[in-house]
Length: 278
Image 1 (tube, helix red, strand yellow):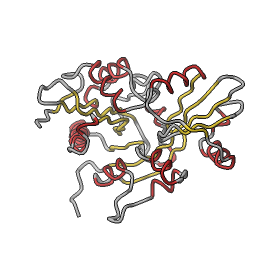
Image 2 (image 1 turned 60 degrees about the horizontal axis):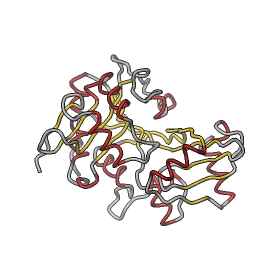
Image 3 (image 1 turned 180 degrees about the vertical axis):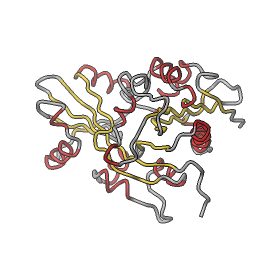
Image 4 (image 1 turned 90 degrees about the horizontal axis):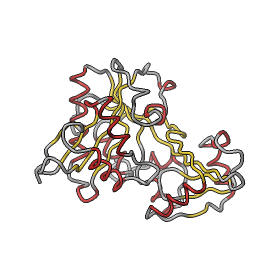
């Protein structure tokens, strides 16, 4: 398979990239066509695409923003804080910022495992060096936390992030891929992404996704999740918690007809050169 690489604004259309997003993300997590177009307009060098041999069909997309960061772990923002609202980066992008943030990566499902993520990270490293940016950082999303907890019952985010296989690499595929790229973990952000919704919105999400939804019946777990994710500031009352199989959880206030999805990430820094394999 030939894999040409390109800048997002130069090849694949926003519509094509939005179609890729819809294959990779739940409805409330994906970038819209207008989001993608805005990101390409604000920071074109940071929106990177790997295409099929036709040079048009997107196989992988890496969306990045450029910000100023003090280098102090306590000063790391949230994913939402870097994305802005709307998540076009127009309110958060700093053209002189010292850090590039890898915000989202989407890989066409049928081409996963073929090195596209590696290619995209190599591309953003080259961009960072060309722009003379000091740091490459990322709010990393453990992609299999939801499915793993369904299989094992493990619900503690920090514990999952530390799990390794027999060969010593992280059990989570995305954390494993980034660790092989030299990722140095910095801190867990329990409120990386917060998505408010009405009950009507949530019903639409349930209908339009292929996810399996389950109500959390363990009251002690509900209390732990409310505390860990800081949900008391989002809803007046939590009547139910839903596990949709994604990294985060849905919290519902049935009296007010309100809901919020809250997801944790783990911040890490990548070296500007690919480390030698041991």
